[in-house]
Image (cartoon, rainbow, N blue to C red; front, top):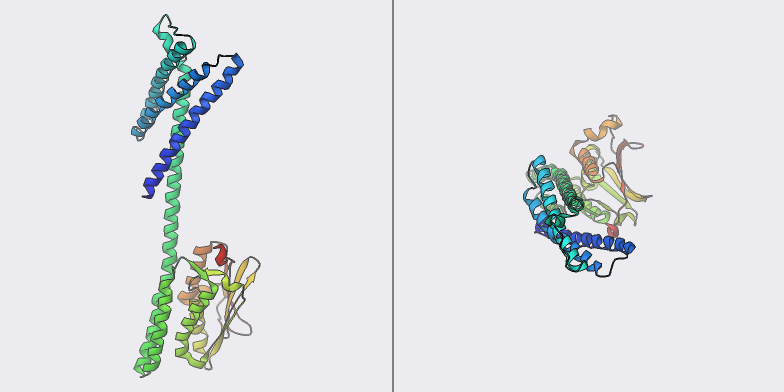
Length: 357
């Protein structure tokens, strides 16, 4: 259906250009005739001549369509021959009209005079043919460019989906393993609560397109669903503080990009502390950017800063790759050791609001 619409638009475009071009041809020649003080009836001769050119170039269009895939030299020879033949026929019609109307039925001594001005008209026909092929090749180039952009977009979307869905098995494995452990130790009530929270979180995950952005406030809601699951495991050992400015809540962010960061903090910080720990999630507008920070008070990392992301499991590397796929170079993702201890993740992305998305 879309391709059919494109063909209809291009067919309409041809007729618009055809009409405008030959009307312009008649107008230019009429303005030129004013310098030679021609009689008013000459305007009719010009209109009929332009109309003849309009009609004679229509068959050329269909002929060029048929020979479009011909070898280059054959194509050139056919275009030259067809343009000359149409120019000769146009010259006959134009001269006959001129003699009949403007010269009151004048007849030349030789029929060869009917082909007068054929060369000049040949240049016009050749120019028409050149414009036709130029416009067609330009349209083909645009089609190929559009196809390339569509292919790039589809590959980009596939990459984003792959990165987002990569988190689901990883997260599910950890959660189901925790539920299995609760069942083994006869904590059926806790296991049931955890399963209910998991169901809500997965429903949220499925309801949101991986390639679309959502308001930060909604992302926080999803994060709280995930934290409800983890709090079943850690109870009082897990403390989470959310500190987001009012303005930042309407900012658009990738869906479920906070969950793997929190999961990383829980795995490498909270789980290793006997008394539990705290995770702080903050967000604020910083100029034309949105600054999101996730920090914990865990033991931190002894690895160099430039190795922290790749050594942090699936979550950190996945989030970085998603941000790169969505924003290109227009983002920053840094992981550093927190003070006095723990780990801090700073994310900086363009500030986009719901209203202007």
